[in-house]
Length: 419
Image (cartoon, rainbow, N blue to C red; front, side):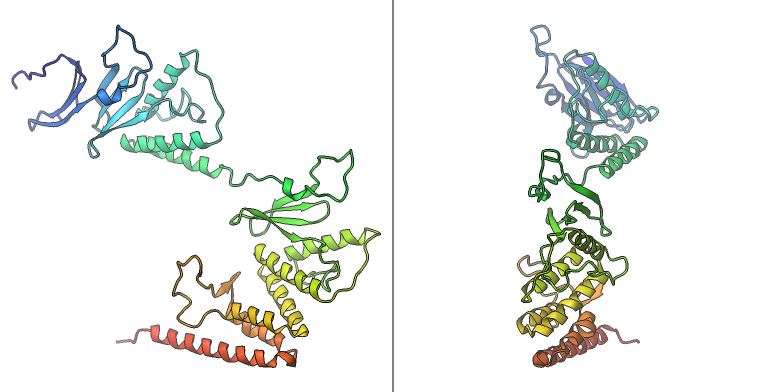
């Protein structure tokens, strides 16, 4: 091949096994040729990599501070600056990718030995060079990290190892990234809102958080019990504390030390039993009469608490007690509300607007139990105990029969005829 005239002296030259030639001129121009096919693969400037330099003086003004330019193991051009920042040229995107830098000083993985456990890892060696360069700078100090830098650093490492086409390093980065996410804090919440108002306060325990238990509930949500035996469950969707056991309904017919204890191993029942036992030890505690308001509010709270705890057995028991109470009181409006919530919208409309946030899709199940089955086997029989609501009972029995008949017909139509 005749002499190639570049118009400037060559500073870096590299050639791989496939007869690809990389050349960087003194003017900062990078060329990549395929000598075997006599074609130019790449003609790119390095100016964008060195426009912002930390040090600039008259001596090196206008000089491109590049200490290395070669092919990476994947065959892409790799340039390393004097700051040890490394750049890989992506032949598909036609741009430079920064794969090694010092942008994450607070990362738990920003170390001079970062990724060095991978023998002969190209990305690991580049990062080690960055770390060694920073270690020589007396102004470099370690800073703390809230996890953001570490996560961003690992994501960058993951992308860099993928760009370098380094399978071992990619696997190691992926493993480190998954481990980091697994130990990342899911919840950081204060208990101050639970203990701001205490019945007893003295110099001895002033400022002390009176918590006797903090654990996961059976549904996996944080559960905190105070010294007053009030229990709080943290709702991970609403990001707030829900009070699921308390002594706010002393006149309720269901406020007993044996409340819900008939349900074996019921989590809500045990919490309420503890509340009752604690109140029984207080000499000032007395039984008061109820006009029905406290009992109804108590049962509604129990129903919501068992739903928050995701306790199906207790939810069903609370639902049955609530419906029986409403039937005894002949509270037709609330009974209708309960029946309608378990009956659902007319057939064919349940999936009509599933993505409308103002009108969410109706779920035919609650805690794994079919709502129509609960309506037929629990709710309607409980309503039948009072003849004053007989008309409501007949209405929903007819509606439920129509729904079930329509559903059975729809299921039959969905079955393709055999040929």
